[in-house]
Length: 538
Ligand code: ADP
Ligand code: ZN
Image (cartoon, rainbow, N blue to C red; front, side, top):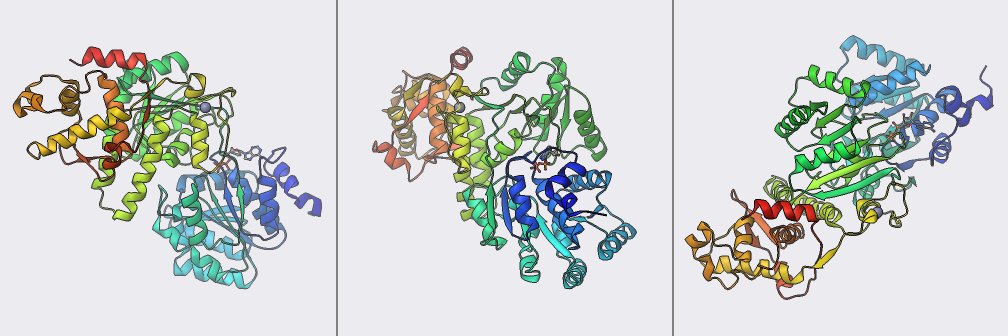
């Protein structure tokens, strides 16, 4: 016999999951869901979102209210969760494209019989006429208990993970108005949050916003000089023998970086969508099971990976935006012990990202939003104040700088020197303007810096640029400083990068900078970077 006390959330947490206490706002969310309220749950990765619907699902099933449907886009995650629930004695199943017809029919029978506590289902499956017919029948019998929409940001076109199938989930509310809904996500800037509420009709839902702070993560961003060497140094200094993830943009770079690390004596495995499924699975399993392996991967790796002792996440290329950065770095230190989020970035990254957006077939509205997100990410990378505070501010969470923190960010540990770059920015813009006046031609970054610094190269001679009024007006600044100025100008959209040769052009907003209406302060490049660039230049 199940006594009322053993059906309490705390008892379920203890008896079914073997945990002693709820974390953060879990208890509040669970009480609210058991009572039948709608909720929007914003909780960082690793915060414990799953229990927020699993415990109510069990409590409501025991109370005779039937099955909880969990919508999830992640097949691997469905698999893991169903396995774990069954292990714990909770009857759960999933429906997705990996099941055969007889397997599907078996799950459907379990669901219709009322025995099933949780059903995980892919969004495209949920809205099929067949599935809806079954849900209608459960609803009429009062046997559709709860709907949980995991990864709810997939409904937003602003998000990094938009899935058209999520848009159709709106019909759940219209069709089953008496069934409470929980929408859960780890990524939600204001725009995405508003979109979720709007598209899933959650205007009346209570919002539970957890802190996004990951106090044990130490954020560091370095200027790219020789990124692989910098990475190697970082691993040798801080993480010899530790498990880590290194993100790269392209498959080729993944392979090359993994090979190179292995040659340097660091055990690394590649992971990207171009590898055979079997090999991918092998690498993933080895990473999860063996100690101290480094996974070099594209963003294909990581969704739903729950390895607690990842000691660092490194980015050799810029992530897409701050949400992606947060998610990817969030895979480090899930066990709560100190871990590093390390990133190297440079001018080429800025140019590439801008071009990827500009050249994409998306409409102008979408591109504008993407550019805004890129700007926010670059502002974080170029910041000379607390990175943690900036990151949290992006998620709408006020916070103090992390200076006193055990895992303080690089800027708090060692506040960087800055320099006044307003005049330099104006010089760079007027030089681009002169190029254009002088024969209507456009040039790239390297040539621009040569002209500003007054270097007599073949190209300068070929175009007679030593005669421009801007030739040599920036000889007082180093190449590294000029690259920083250009990074900012491109990041802020004052300079546009065009065409096959990545040539530079002024945009409308450059006028305000030229008129001296915009001021700019930049980080002083680190000693190491300046020295390396100088010795390689000339
Ligand atoms: P999310 O989906 O938010 O990324 P999960 O639901 O996968 O996070 O939970 C992350 C980890 O924390 C899991 O291993 C989970 O079992 C564990 N966990 C969640 N809540 C608790 C709790 N109250 N006590 C102990 N462990 C918990
Ligand atoms: Zn800080």
